[in-house]
Length: 91
Image 1 (tube, rainbow, N blue to C red):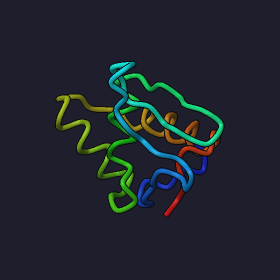
Image 2 (image 1 turned 90 degrees about the vertical axis):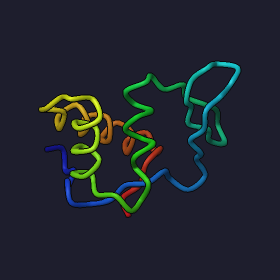
Image 3 (image 1 turned 60 degrees about the vertical axis):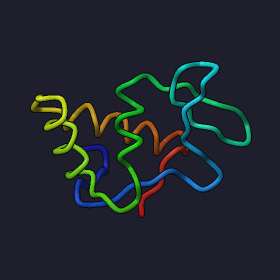
Image 4 (image 1 turned 90 degrees about the horizontal axis):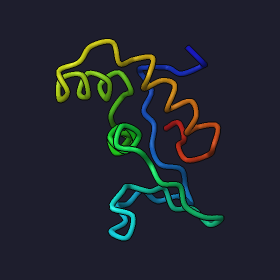
């Protein structure tokens, strides 16, 4: 599973900020070199990566809120990409 541990907690990396931008009407990750606009799914996942909630609980919460199952691979894919981009860190 891409080296992702579902029992670990992830949070926004130092030097980065997750916020809603009125101008874009979207959530963005801000960092010194720029900004990345997130789609709704990515924003829902990253907003739950608060550094205190395990990834397993994030997935359970998303599945409950959206009445879906089997979201693990999609969430792991996004978290892996966010780690690779430096937006998230393991805590």
